[in-house]
Amino acid sequence: MKILEKEQVYEAVKTNPVYVRSTDRPIRFTAGDKIRAKNIHPYGHTRLPRYVRGCVGTIVHHHGSFVFPDTYAHGNGENPQHVYSVRFEAKALWGDTAENSAVYLDLWDDYIDALV
Image (cartoon, rainbow, N blue to C red):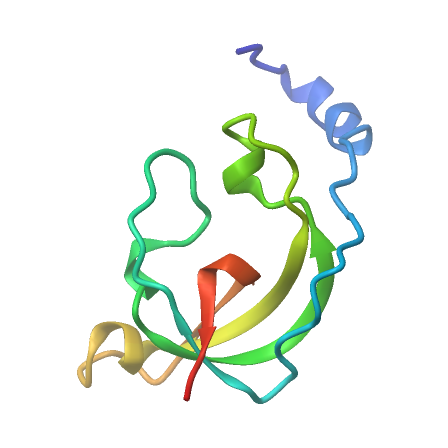
């Protein structure tokens, strides 16, 4: 892995490829929908933090569809899917003694289930 010098960082970020992709998948959620982060334990790369797995959150925003990093990182294709901003209350993540705050995460479709 190449380590960039401080002066090279801006140029690298500026030329970073775009990972926006179209998908035939329907948009499953809208702002205000309650979801549950899947309690999965994939081998290798994932952008689903352990501390939210199995927890309930609220959809805040739909960002569009993007390359799914879990499949892309393992050479299994782009698998584009919708990405949602999800708000998790701190108490839902860490219990009643947590501060009255929240964590916002951008999560791909494959990470979340509708709360029924």
